[in-house]
Length: 291
Image 1 (cartoon, rainbow, N blue to C red):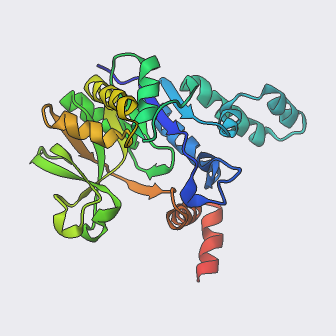
Image 2: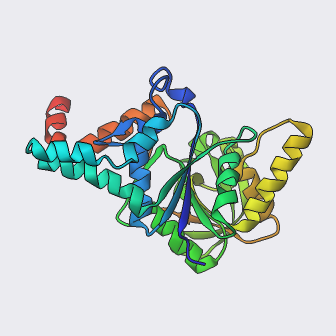
Image 3: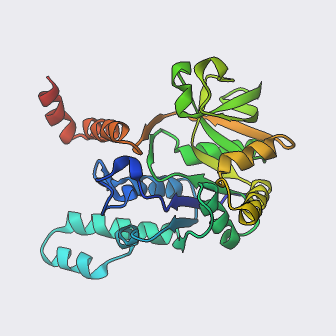
């Protein structure tokens, strides 16, 4: 089945970036000249995704405002002779049409599996991409396209992987690799969440990207039903993948490119700095400061 749909969970409060995110959604913090979520949306559109659901919570209206077309502003900018600015505003609004962006309020238990299940109820019984909005990938082939290609090869759920220094294992979910299929594609038996370095089952980290299939959605549904019965714990996507991998094929794809995480202050500054250094106008200025 061709992957046409994607989910961006954007309901979190960005607690690791407080107080910066007290009034501004973390997804709207800039990396370069774009909010971080725009990088994700552009990646999906460039990979042929035609239906994007952004799952939000209260206080996230800035996301909708950003992508909403604004013909009046465009007309005013053109009347003022600011054609380049008008083109830029128009292009952002066009992303909403190209990606057919819709918004959904999050409901349900705590955990990153909840927004995926919320979106699945409206997206139907087909595979979908799930990308977190606080990751930025710089890659010749978009990360989303690499995941789509891996699904085309396997017809099974796929996790985005990156090589990892074993000393950093306690920051990530680490896959249990069952078979190396070449070209960065690996059959995996499950994930171990934040293991100690000596317990890490591989030298790869699972990062923010998934192809999710109906079998995983069914497991998320069962987890959620159990939560409503007992009201304990959380509903996590990785837990559903682990259960699914015990009985069905699940794969990891090592992503070719550079990954920037913007979810904590240090990594956010690194992403900002790297983006600025790569900019043809701003890069030379920053290098003068460093020298």
